[in-house]
Length: 130
Image (cartoon, rainbow, N blue to C red; front, side):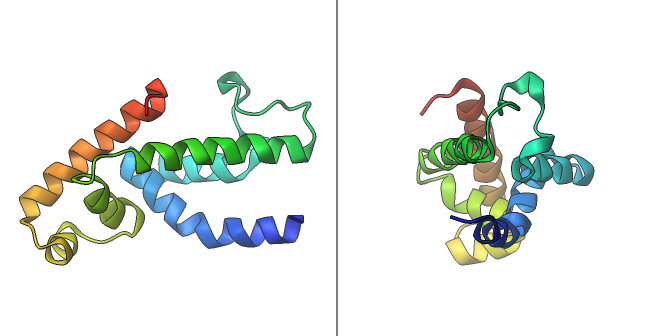
């Protein structure tokens, strides 16, 4: 895949990536930083060991792709109870009320499932657990 195609894919996911980062941090500046760090390989923190700065761009892209696959795998491993409310609110940007209406559940249930789903997702990402 050439650089132009990668840039198009990144531009297409950036709004969703920002919303997801915001759902994790609840701070717009931190969310913007998280999203940018995910997308801009050169700005990833050396201390996290995410990218070998000596690696060529193709190797760096493979590393970032693996990280994104880890995030997707962690999200997909969430129990079915938590994934839809978290996806609709954190990724799609819907309100709790909109999510409740779509899923046919109470707003309080949405809030609870989003909170628990977020905690499970973060734990799986930090611990590397499935």
